[in-house]
Structures are given as structure tokens and as C-alpha cells.
Amino acid sequence: MDQSDEILRSLDNSGLRKGHIKTMVIAGMGFFTDAYLLFVLTVAMPILASPAGFNLNVTASGYTVLLGYRVPTLSVVEGAITSAALFGAFVGAFIFGNISDRLGRKAVYGIELGIIIAFTIISAFSVNSTMLVISRFILGIGVGGDYPLSSTIMSEYSSSKHRGKLVGMVFAMQGFGLLAGALVGLVSIYTIPLSYSWRFMLGFGAVPALYVVYLRRKMLETPRFSLQVRGNAEYASKATKTIVGGDAAEIAGTVNTVSKKTDYPKMIRKYLTFILGTSLTWFIFDMAFYGTTLNNSFILNNIGYGTTGPLKTAVMNTAIGDTILAAAFAVPGYFIAVATVDIVGRKTLQWLGFLVMAVSYLVLGIFYSTLEDDVSLFIAVFGISYLFGNMGPNTTTFILPTELFPTEIRATAHGIASSVAKLGAGIFTFLFLILGYVLGQAGEFELLAFFSTLGAVITMLTIRETKGLPLELTSLEPSKGIIGFDPYEDYTNR
Picture 1 (tube, one colour):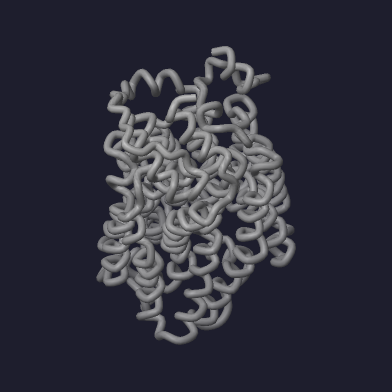
Picture 2: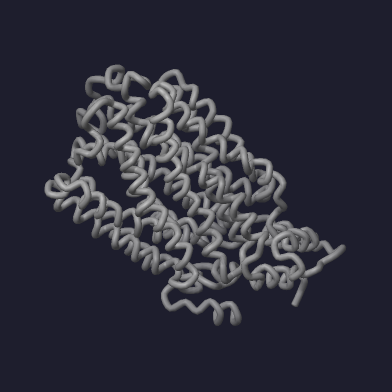
């Protein structure tokens, strides 16, 4: 066994250590912030549309021709505000993913959080909707960068047995961010005049990011990148010791100077099956998840929840509805995934989650006219799509790109998948109100049912199970086989 194998074995067999938990918190607080910033708009948007915000009901009155349809200008402006950060994430995920494969994870980790902090504060001081859209687009570049960086770093530091749980816990912080957005919205609406409450909601997102930005800049390069790309065994040994302590292989004074120069186009072609599989399934999921979640206030209003009474009461009701959805369905879904992903497996959770989402959306579409008269039943069916979406594809689409690709293109491939996903999220979020106007709410849910079914099919055809295996096995090229693949045997005989 050479020195590289000793270091990797130390990581893979380390179990769950304090160093893993510390890394998870540092990475996860970024996702808490990301989710908070994206989803707090659900509560803030009704205020922005009112005289207490930008008075969009007046300034964006009339109609606009879009995609050949005459739609309310208000829907176009609100769609631009809610989707701006997602389009920014589309740009940021690919850029930061590729840079971190070229320069190293440490070189850029924390910079993306700095972008988020700066433009979160700027967005809170927006003087009009245009400034808000631009600042949130740039903020979104940082959000997008967090996806490939945090997931890859956590994956490359994890043990084989607990990797799914640890990467899943990083992503599960999104659930708390979503819940925090609703709760901060409730508190600010209750205690602060509406003309300032929306600014407080947006600006508060900088607080959790400030907590960890320094810690991110101090983190060491991951052992796998140091070994397999830079060829530096001594540094890899040092980084491993910060995580696993005394069980780390001691490689003192020894440096392997062999370093890889990656042929990115060749590697992308080689792993094209996995790139298509991870990108398309994540694209489909994010269309449904962000399209509905960022428009919860409109969905709830359309079924008569939160529409009566003065503006403050209506906004409070919407915030309460968001809190119920997050606490009862979204957050439990994330942690069911964390508890089961290393037992049930990523592939099973993903296709199962997609299928339950499809059934939920189909029920909402077919029986919409009946369900809109029964708020509790509507929220229950809609909540089931939340629950299974989060315990399935919302978590697994984040984990799988960290496992299906080798170290030299891991962040790039994750960046491609998350970038494509955020493009889908941005498009559907922007079009959600417009499609509702064209197709009706029932038609939108039926469309989502079709795409969710497609997500399950693509998962079955393109994704390989990765639970419990070292990254060097899970990232074998797709040509080695997907259906009936035996990684242990293949790895031994290759």
C-alpha cells in the first residue's frame, strides 16, 4: 500500500468524527443563508407589491406581451424579482465549480460567501425593483458558487459509511433556512412597520453568512484534491489529521511532486452519461421545487388563504402558511433523507421521491377545483410533494454529483449540474405566475406531474448507486456499466 492509499484509507474508514461535524457546520451555514435569502421573498413579495414596498400594483399595472400571450405586467416584474437570484446561481455554480477544480477548493472557498454578504446588504437598501433585481442576481452568483464548493469539500473529507449523511446534513440546513425565512418574516411584520420590515427580512440574511466566512477562508485544501490533482501527500496527510485525528496516516516530510493537468473536454465527454443524468434530474426537480416554493404566497392566496383583511393581516397569514409548510413537511423531509440515504441509497430515494411528487401534483391538478375549497386538504396534498421532494431528489441531486465524478472534475461536474438546475428553477419561477395565467393553476400542477415522472425515469436509466463506497469506486467511468454494475469487482479487475 503506497502513501496515497494510506491517507485515503484513513479518510474512508474514519467513522464520524468531531472534525466532520465542524466541517459540516461551516459548509452548512452557507446553505442556511442561501435558502433563507431565496425563500424569504415568499413573505416579502406581497409587501413589495404594495405601497409599503415599490407599489408594484400601480407602477407595474397594465399588460405585457410575452411568449405570444398578453399577461399582466405585475406578474412579469414579480417573476423577475423572485427568479433573479436563481439566474445568478446559474452563472455562479459553473464558474466557481470550474475554478475550484483548477485552483483548488481552498483558493475560492469563502469568496462566494463574501459576494452573498455584500449584495444581501445592498439588496436591502434597494430604491426600486430594478436595483433589487440586479443586486439579487449578483447575490445569486455567490449562492450558485456555494453549491459545488460546499458539497465537494464535505464529500472529499467524509468517510465512506457516513458520506451521504454528512453531505445531506450540509444540504439539510436549507430546511432551517427556509423555516427561518418564514419566522423572521413573521417577527418583522409584527414588530416593524411594513415599509421597513421587508428590508429587514432581506438584510438579515447577511448575519449567518458573517458567522462562517472567516472559518471558510482558514480551511485546508481537501486531502483528495491535494493527492490526486496536486500530488502533495504531505499536505494531504496534514489535512486528514485535522478531521480524523490520531487515526490519520503519518506522511511526514514526503512530497509526491506528480501533478495532473486535466483535459476537461475529454473528461466531460467520458462522463457525459452521468453529467446528463445529474443535470436533467436536478433541472426537473428545481423547476417544481423553486417554482412552487418561491410562489407559495400566490398559491395560498389562490385558494383563499391570507387574502382577506388589511395588508398586514394578509401577509401575516401567508407567513404562517409558509411556516406550517416548512415545519410540517419541508424540514422533516430533509432529515428523513439524512437518516436513510446511507441505508436505502441515493438512487432509490430519488426515483421514489419523484414518483410521489408526480402523484401529488396530478391530484392537485385533476381535483384543483375541489381542493381549493378545502385549505387543509390542499395543504396536506401539497405538503406531501414537499416532504417526498426533500427526502428524495432535493437531497440526492445535491449528493450524487459529488460521488459520480473523479476528483479532477468533481466540482466542475457538480457546477454544471447545479448550474443547469438553477436555470430550470429560474425559468419556471419566472414563468410560474405567467403560466398560471395561461394554463391555470390546475394546468401548472399537471405539467409538474409530467416532469416529475420524467425525473423518475431518467434517474432509473442514468444514475448508479453509490452508498457506502469510496469515491474512487463511485466515480468509475459510466462505460463500466450502470445497470447491474458491481463496483467492487470492477475496481479489482480494471
